[in-house]
Every structure is written in structure tokens, then in C-alpha cells.
Length: 113
Length: 113
Image (cartoon, rainbow over all chains, first blue to last red; front, top):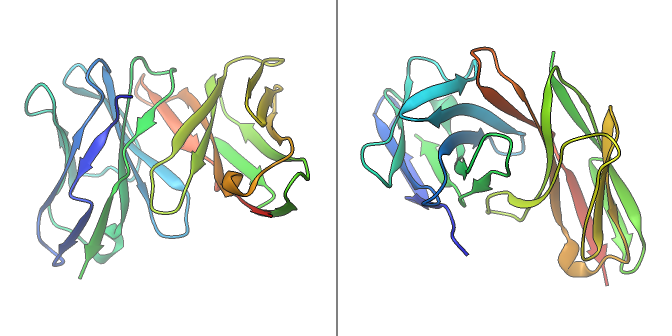
């Protein structure tokens, strides 16, 4: 069964550094998403992306965050200048259309030192 | 404010002891309600989508139902392998014309043999 893959599984970064999280969505899916889950807390929506544009973003997704689909298969989340509070599990998901099930990767654990 | 509340926070069952998990929501413009299962260190795994009040979906020992204000996930004769966190998520219209997905905090289910 097709799946969403995320790399790396664990990223350790110094505060203030830039980090890029990578995702390969399911190939026939058109909508892509990033979520984060701080340890012990809810899964939180960050951004949705369709047709090379952001279609919706949350209040969390400020100017420090950006997303990109640099080629036909990858979908990336960039955090420009990481803060301690960015430490979390980041999940990528994809769906065929918005109100169809989203399929999630197993996440990247981001640790900011 | 859009909100999704799950109860109970944790549920301990004996193998074979049926029970129900609750998800209540207040959102404007519901597009769909989703149930996911999340195992430790993994991404959410899709279980069911429900779109309108009165709808029911079933899969093995699980059955999901939807009313205008809440959804239930019924677990019949659970087994230890059903132990996981069960997440409810609601998709609604966003602020910029797209869609946002709001997750509940989840119910941690423990099934003892």
C-alpha cells in the first residue's frame, strides 16, 4: 500500500539554525499538509498546500515557516531560525482531495538545543 | 471558536469488554469527521471518515457513528492489540478559503488480556 515517507526520522539542531524537513507524499495525491505534535499535546494543523500554493495556514505558521514542492515528488517544511519551542514531532500528510482521508507519515522528531 | 473534545482521556478495558469513545465538536461548516489510531512513535493511521449525521462505518471490532454534535467510536470485544491512542479530527472551512483540520487530544485505550 502506498505510504507517505518522511526524512529524517530525528533531527537535532542548535537554536537559531535553519532546518528543512522532507516528505514524499503518496504519488496520486494532490493536497499536502504539515502538522506538529508537541510531546503530550494535540496534533496541530500548520499548513495545507495545493497546486503549488498555500491553501490554508494556522496562526502557528508564521514568517519563520515556509513550505515548498521543489520537484514532482518532494514536499518540504523549512523553519528559518529555530527556537526551543519548535521542538516537536512534525507530521506530513497527503490526500486526494481536501475532505478525503489524509494519510500521514511517521513523522520527524525535531529537537532544538 | 472551533473545538474538538474527546472523552475519556484514558480508558482501561479487559479483553472482550466493549465500550465507546466520544468526540464532541463545535465547528462552523463541517466538511468531514475522521477517526485515526496512533501508536507510540508513529503517525496517525486512518480508520474512518463520516460526513453527515446518521452515518455509520464499521471495520472489524470498530464502529463509528456521527450526530450533529458528536461522534462515537464503539469498540466491540476489544483485544490487547487494539491498545493505542484514538484521535478524532474535524475538517472545517478555513480563514482564507481553504480547509483546516482540528484534532482532539485523543483517548488512550489500554486493553488487558
